[in-house]
Image 1: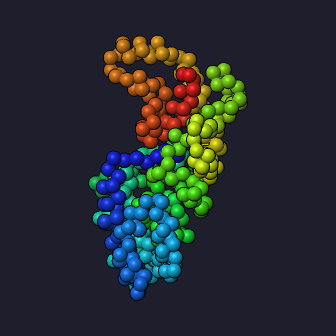
Image 2: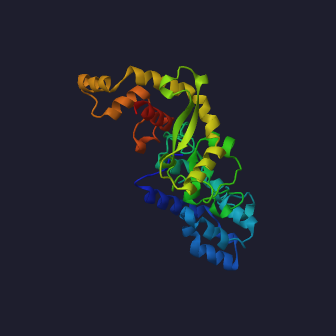
Image 3: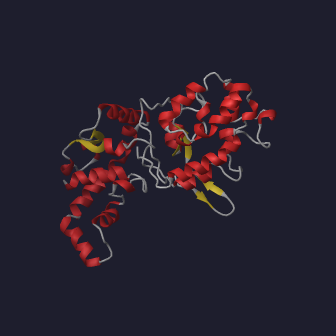
Length: 308
């Protein structure tokens, strides 16, 4: 739902590939399969989403049991890495050193789920323990396509609600869904309401929270965004946040442009209007900061409608 953009993404990717490549025992393959992986493994792990299909097709003839053992994980004694699981299971283990899923999530700093924008997904590590991190959703199923189980752009930091409870085993694809590293849902869809005119609403029963398509959006992107809304049950999930809309109504009535200007003038601690609005609404008003606090997109979109 919120695009993942980081200025140091290429460095994070290189660190990820450099480390996880060690967790894939290509020695269990033989002949042309082993030679192919020796030549292409780095590229598979760093593949951009539009390259996924290429590597799926090129490795289709490999024994799936071996691909799954190497890239997802196996307990078979002859295929294990240093007594632990191989592949993704090794990477996702808390005890794996020197690099595991906690290190990737800490580097990415995705603090709010990019799929729903309503749950925190921060990473907490202290000197002694790895405490909490986001789950990593496999945009392309690791069960069906294990060759991509450790590929950087196939690992989407997300909340447990979206990854485990809602998405589950739904099949995603680049031709049907938006990809968080490629597409910007925020540029395609905006929150709105249906029912009583928003400025006149007084109670929850008078309106519904809906998604509207922004102007001049390509129909292909609109369809993908609609599929994301459907598969992550975003209409149903956000129907539970009508209280946020009602609070924004009260806040917009209490703080008009003049009162906001007075706050800025009287306190002399706020440099920008957006700083005051964040204090008032408890959400970020800048598009580039929507991933810093839960529900910021809903707050921003609805508040902008109230101001217009």
